[in-house]
Image (cartoon, rainbow, N blue to C red; front, top):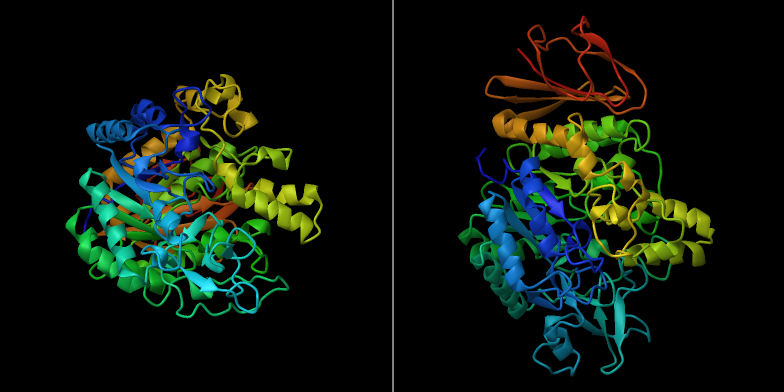
Length: 564
């Protein structure tokens, strides 16, 4: 396996609106990030993925871009961004920017021109269709609810928007669109950035003819992913991107790729032929969702550890030495990891450390989402008016109006699944607004538990989640087996314990994780050379006099051994 800096890195994701407000307007900004770079350097991460900071009307918090070469005014200026990049590089931290090129804002100059007339030179930058039987051109549902088509009154044609109606899908079949995208990528790379996280990049190729989606529900609009995820030309488009742009720079590229399987991922990330460094897959993000629901975030169900083992092991073994995994449990679109996969109550600290152990000992590049390193939790806002996320508001409306749920039941689902769980302000200290902002009211409310869950408290406690993450990152830098070692699942049938080994060049690690809030008996299989095992890291104090092969693991206990 080729050794590269991006395989050996640990990435920290920043959602700038919620990270740190430097000027008291209630909105996080670039200057706020600059002020906290020393904190991130202390943690030990070496790459920052910055969610979109480009000019945007903010219909979907920056994922609707109106100018790819300028900075959103409320975040700062291009000069301020350049100062931030310099500050990162001075500290040995690389910067990965978000690349959002499946769609633009409807306020982007290309679309402003495109809607002026059917023969405008920019018309074919987007996907237009006439009405079909007096209605939308097909039955595709928008990912955020309703139709994926919007009627343009002036021309009498519909345009495609897989997300909100202000996020207009680009027509990647048009070579001019691809040339524009490649040029803006070069513009940022030549400014010195270190890579791209590519938003829904496997949606850029649609099935020719844009046929109707299969009818799977009574709804007027149906999920059309079959016709726009992993489309017929996506590899061709990305190969062209690699040839013309990516191959000319030493960068990290990660594709957000909903609906991929391991075969798709290998094609995208193959050591020799793939266009991208790695992809984000979402199978484990759907563990607690009802597959029949109109949105994965509109339902919740209990999940079994066996399901998580099966999914993660399939990806670990499937990509093996052929591709590369991104390892994460939360991001700006997902609930907080400790609330979803751990226990955010009695065992918050222990389970947060266990989840960190889990992600940092899998093969792949680990991603830490802001606040994960201090065990931030989901928030349960009492009213839908406290929520800001466009998808959350749409789901609430659909659950109540179309599915007949009470507002209380709908809110209960959103308490578990809303994207705003990850978007409450970073909790820096116990002062008002958690030290995030001096504003009386930030753009979204702070989680009320900030008084005891905050960075200041974590830094003052040598046994905190923060210092556990710091140690994991240090171990990863010092132990190539954590990065490149072969993964093997053991004790596959154990209902509470997730156990696996990592092996490289004669060195072997054993990872034991009790994914439950009760004690669990661990009986190790024969064949493990355990006589001279050394504890590499654990989230509980060692228990002296313990039998080496059969012992009880405490609630949410994590142990990692270096085997003799």
